[in-house]
Amino acid sequence: MSTDFLQLVWLGNTVADYGLALGTLVVGLLAIALLSQWAIARLQAWASRTATDLDDRLLHLIERPLVRLLWLGVLYVSLSNLTLHPILQDGFNALCIALATLGVVQLLSSLVEYGVRVYWLGRRGDDTLGQSLNALVPALKGVVWAVGFVFLLDNLGFDISAVVASLGIGGLAIAFAAQGILGDLFSYFSIILDRPFEIGDFLVVGDMVGTVEQIGIKTTRLRSLTGEELIAANTDLTNSRIQNFRRMRRRRIVFTLGVTYETPQAQIEAIPKLIQQVIDATEGVSFDRAHFNNFGDHSLDYEVVYFVETSDYTTYMNAQQTINFALKASFDQAGIEFAYPTQLLYLAQVNDQGAMTPGPSEAMATPNGHGATAPAPQFQG
Image (cartoon, rainbow, N blue to C red; front, side, top):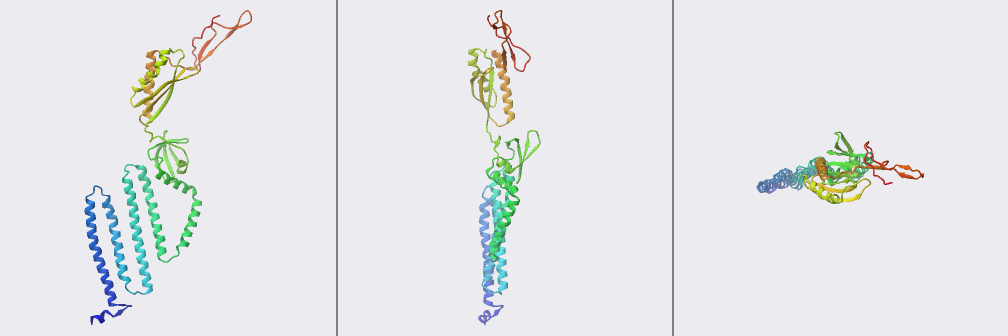
């Protein structure tokens, strides 16, 4: 009697088929519940022993989507043993494909965002990277959803070649119409990946000098030394030679000074040592060298090189000022005179025989651009 009951047919399926489908569904759901509780409990116990909460967040992200996908899989397997009306079967298959695709895309989107956040946490404190990743996450999610949408259309039986071709033609038209914007966008990604500069860096780009305040998708904003905001397209920055002073660990300084030709030989030889003593006594700088390197038009020239152990410009100027003060005091104490540009004018006079001879007091030395005169060299008649 019971066997005959199981063979009764209703809506194209026997009672045994309905029982098998229901049993498969119940057993599958119970197995998923037990397995999820056991596996999740083990994973939570493992995550609680770690020092970071990143694994806890990952477990929270994948727990629900995976369980829902397993439920959908059990439902599909249990109902696949039944013979359904073609329209109902096609609708059920389409619904399962759509729900599965939606679940997988949501899971992948969450994993992409999680991976980006983990990468940013590994570089905490980098404001430029944080700003860049905040703009990058929506773009990555958009790519994942676009791929999922194409995958869904393909599995639903649509001819995606025409869709892909249409998207390609439309994308090409948009690219031509907005090539300037797209150029700046790709330059933005180039700045993010290559990172030639970051927020807070002091840059010199052509005639622009300033500190980076914001890196946008199309433009980058700098604050100049005089206070105004400078806005430059990302394409202009990536196509230019950029001087980034923030990444300069130390500043190399080269300057020259000159003394008069009347300086005695002993003092000429002692000047490099005197310069070294002055620089060694200055805080935050390192002496490199000082050499008598040139016989100038008006002076004996020395080239001095030292390093400032920071990239800060104000620190460099303070150090240079201290060195200048100390050099002036040391040279004054040693009786060494700094040279300044001079010009010698020699005046000739005609003697009784008509010959031109230099006058004993006609020559004079005048500093260029100054009203004072210096004693002129004398000629013996």
